[in-house]
Amino acid sequence: MTSSPIAMVIHGGAGPLKGGDYSREVVHMRGLIEAGRDRLAAGASALDVVVETIVALEASGLYVAGRGASPNTAGDFELDASLMDGPTRRAGAVAVLTGFKSPITAARAVMEKTPHVMLAGAGAAAFAASEGLEPIGDPAAWFTPAWKTVPPHKGLSTGTVGCIALDSSGALAAGTSTGGVFGKKPGRVGDTPIPGAGVWADTRVAVSCTGVGEMFIRAAVASQIAHRLRFTDESLATAAEASLAEVALLGGEGGLIALTAAGEIVMPYNSAGMKRAALYPDGRIVSDVF
Image (cartoon, rainbow, N blue to C red; front, side):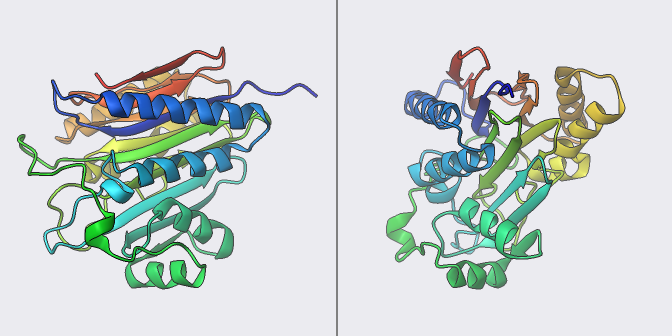
């Protein structure tokens, strides 16, 4: 039995400010890719690597997710995350989660411990507590918002993290986590926790999206890419660009990462940039923003 090539991709959100210094993020993402490479090479599952990587992205405070999330207009930190396992198409998600450090860990618990796909709000928090997930004792001390002030450009300012991976068994997995758009209304839910919009994984492709979630929901971007590959002869690049073009037509911007079971990678975006890093099947690593 021959093993499949390993590969993984992460993003730290679309829409960075042109001319900004993202050297810390570039180094951090490269380090996470190197750690994921070593885990995948040792036989770890794509699902485990995706979760471990997103936990680290959430905890870093460098991105608008987890510790780096910004509060909503009521001053509360409401977090969303989703996870999808390619071989089984199982999915788990949490939305409007408050009080817990790792939304992606909660999403995995929903997938593995319940018959549901998504839990939201107080129900998600009660479930996270029942599973013994790590709470946030003092939100004011814990959160270090990546956006310290209102971003200087118009529209909804976004930030999301995501990871997709291909393991040596040929399995794909995808996960996405976010603090949501800057200045969102309480209870707002974007594409991140919605399988088919902000995340997707099946036996062909894994996708994680970042950007103005309302438009990604309306274009069903993540599953659109998967269905284009399933039902047409389009390449991954064509499918991804066409799906992102629909977001632009709806007035949104953002980007995505996608990875096929053959190890093909694309990382398109229509915003000023996108924090991104990748491990290619040949061992090459890239980490960049613009």
